[in-house]
Length: 119
Image: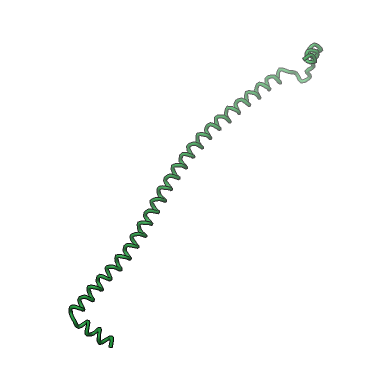
């Protein structure tokens, strides 16, 4: 019975054309919905990628800034270490100079001992 009704409707050109137009419009509507959701997904993916790229660039700039500061601090510390080593070497040489002026069996004379006690 349903097949007979569908056969009768399909045999009428106007109804057949209306069914074809309705099917085409329905297909276009479905395509539009699917395409819109895929366009939204694509836009979200592009937006996220853009944000991640911007974030990576900012992080890279911050790392470069920190590296420059670290290099500057390292150079300053290296200069301070070199100065301290030079001062230590000078103090060692001065001490060696003073030690070399004193004999191994050095004794103090009584006036020197008296002066040290009065101190």
